[in-house]
Amino acid sequence: MNAIPGKTESLLRTGAQYKASLNDGREVWTQGQRLANVCDDPSLGAGIDMVAEMFDDQFKPETADILTMIDEKTGARVSRAWQVPRTHQDLCDRRRLIEYTTYKTVGTYGRPPDLAPLAALGLLAYVPAFRKSTSKFAANNPQFAENIERYFEYGRTRGIIGAEVLADPQNDRSGPSGATGGLLRVVGHEKGGIRVSGAKSVGSFAAQGDEMLFTNLLRPDFPPEACVWAALPMATEGVKLVCRESVSHPGAAHFDHPLAWRGEESDQFIIFDNVFVPDERLFNLGDPSLLQLYGPIIRWVHWHVLTRLAIKGEIFVGTAQLVIDALGTEKFPAVRAFMADIIEYAQALKAFVLAAEANAQPTEAGVMAPDMNFLTAGRLLSIKEYPRIIHTLQELCGQGLVMRFTEADFHSPEIGGYLDRLLPGHNISAALKNRLMNFVWDLTSSSLAGRTELFENVNSTPANFLCERIYREHPRDELKARVARLAGIDI
Image 1 (cartoon, rainbow, N blue to C red):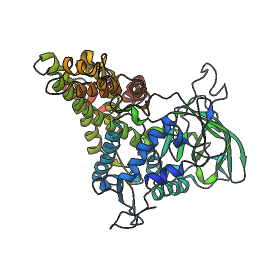
Image 2 (cartoon, one colour):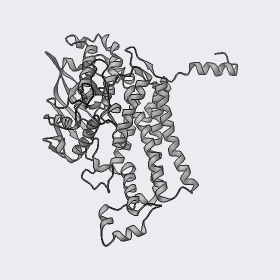
Image 3 (tube, helix red, strand yellow):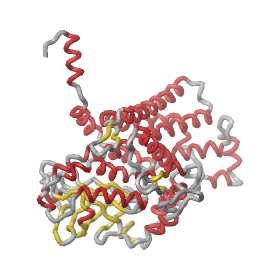
Image 4 (cartoon, rainbow, N blue to C red):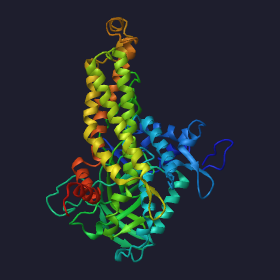
């Protein structure tokens, strides 16, 4: 760990230390080949380099207070990703970190490094419920609550990052849960822990992180051996991480792909082959009532998701204005209407975030929890409107997204001059206008953008589920009674 010069004791890692920690023997597969070191793979390595910059930014005076804080227990400086919000101001301070990671990744990381700690925070926020568990499957296991508290302290003092893994493998769902063998479940009990086998999907950032926090969502036909909640290092024996096809352009000219050259947040299919989970890393074993708490526990993750989308909405506003200025199209009413639409989207999401924070209430454990109803309604709005806002940005660009050229084209002695003369923008050169269009392409239309748009829908939870959740959870009895009195109806 390294100290900030002139500051208190530090428990922060540098970018170099983060990268070195990933060379731990983890089993990562891509293109049918096992990687010797994830940092050496172009698509994984480029994203790792970006995250390493985030670690180094912890030591810069201009970003230190955004990315770090003084630990409430030890007095040492630690990552703000592991902050426990006790007040409304704490939520505001933590939101500044989300803003930083969103701008750093231009919103292309659905699960940036500061997200997974919020899943651990959710467990900590509801630790009293875990302390009451009487699961018969955990007779020889240390108390879940103590495990959660120790794990959170472990993560906070080491500044670990990783993946919050939930999704089951996409396979035959016509039969009982896990009929095809993919459902993660306990396959053995032994001294000091359990053995699990199965798989989890969409392990975003798993191969590039330190650890994973994983669980299953409770279903009606759920077997008791699948009621498990735990955390493990990525290098655990028997864990195999299989990367999906890359969607970025690492190594590309910065001019050609202003976003995609920096790599991506990779997704992994995670195979558990008779994996040993130590007792101290278990947060639930065989207690379905604890799995029912997943929704409340994950609310800080959903707050992060909505906050990131609100900040990304601001990025869309700035991008749209750059395009309008470059093309000189502000005089057209239709263009101004498009711009107003994007502003409305960004402001609406921001309002939901601020409302969720303003109406936050502490849990039994004293952790300030954003209002669930505002989070759910905001997330529903975001995923319904996101594709339309992307299309609006594309409309503003017109043919510019179709007719893009490379840096080599502009440098060509034979054709570069033609491009410079025939394609200038409004008070901007043809080359810079083209670079802007390349940026918008990466943001809205590339394979990187396509993966991001698909992920936003999955990460925010599909709209039909959110509609059902709003119907179930939004309090309406008092409103109904008020209207009944106004209408003179005796209910």
